[in-house]
Length: 150
Length: 169
Image 1 (cartoon, rainbow over the protein chains, first blue to last red):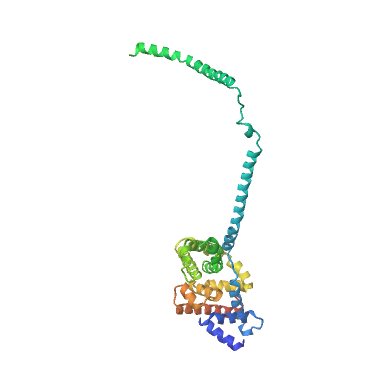
Image 2: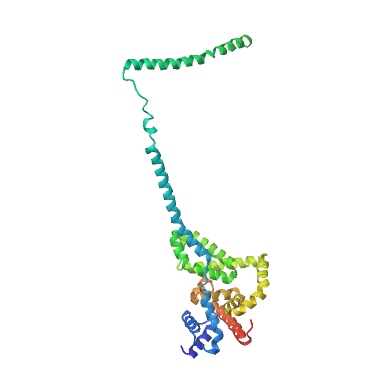
């Protein structure tokens, strides 16, 4: 680009009338090595514009890392669920007691079965009667109470 | 709109929002806060975002409004003192370092401009939006954008020439 054209562009530039394309030409010219000595002072201005455009924020980077962390967390959650299912299945399958617990044995002969049942019922009723023995005292209290309160 | 799509959309321009916010609010932290707020607001409006012609322009307008509110709150409240102290204390030290670093020097000059000129230069010269886009984002007419731009650029030119002639800031 010839020098007079650059000077012309600069005048337009400082009037605020230049277009973005004009400014791109100026940026390119001033970032080069063959800047005319009388225009040397503008070099840093356009260099600064270019430099300032590279400034970036930390907030944006934080947002990006946050979203990338999400699937990782989900993957660990999946792993935890799988592990707990494996653990529960392990307990049910490898515990030998659970298979025998409901098998209490049975009597083949009905007579013996009847006899044993009676024995068990008698045992139960015996303990029940032992319990009702103590209720006699309650009757005593009732009688005494009726003497005084009618 | 799903999270992923939303992020893909905002990632394309969130650095621009950050730079615009930083241009107005100066400090990195406040600019990060501004970006976060604007992204949150956009996320809440995610259903209507698709209706806008340019979500980017909408986001920049929102950033601008947020920063102006912040600046207004600052100048009326007591937060101002804090920031003024911060810059004042460090000028002498920064002076020397920045004198060597011409990038920082230009940065500083731009940040002494009035807010509107700063914003226009940020959007026009740094982010390279064209004048009509900038006008829409800032709800100004194109002529006003050109005037603000020209004033800002001329101040920069004067400062640059001064620097060239005297070699001092």
